[in-house]
Image (cartoon, rainbow, N blue to C red; front, top):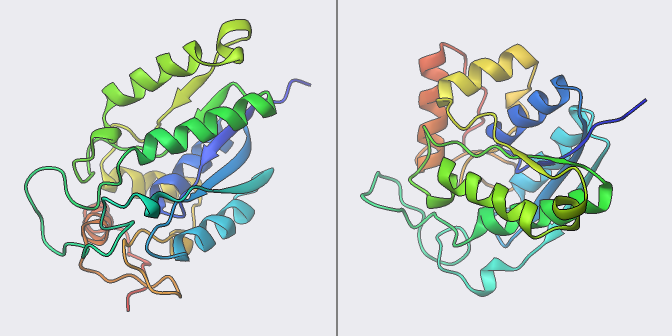
Length: 223
């Protein structure tokens, strides 16, 4: 029996939880990968570990990368998290974060002999991050097959972003269909140690609006 392996980037938030559920439905054996990059709180990483177990991942690995040492974002420095919408790319953008996370996933996929990588990147209800665009994903797909042994000698590597064109409401509905326990997910940029959300940051507002539009009770726990 040929087992299809995939590396799934899991942050602990609702998007990556739905992404892993989609990969599992498609018959992949899921190897969950989280990155501890110096983010403001560990609640999302705790949630990622719980979700990996609940959703039946074959294993869950957390890789440590110290992006706090270079800063440049409200999520990796002492810059305040904004609580209102702003023009342009917001200060919650973490320089090169998705590029770094996907590169780690790419390396682990090669080690595992997996040809597929899933990520929860979304280009509809997002905060204006340049590394959440379809153009970025297409470029990284090309890079993956140019820069790896698997790409040159093997079957190649495929990057999946099943939520790329979904709204937050669409994602909420898809998660309910797949049985995702959204109460275990943490999306807030400044959640407390218990994973309770602030209700004011951009991530909280987008999440709440998505559940509201979908007509689904929001299970988010707030401070």
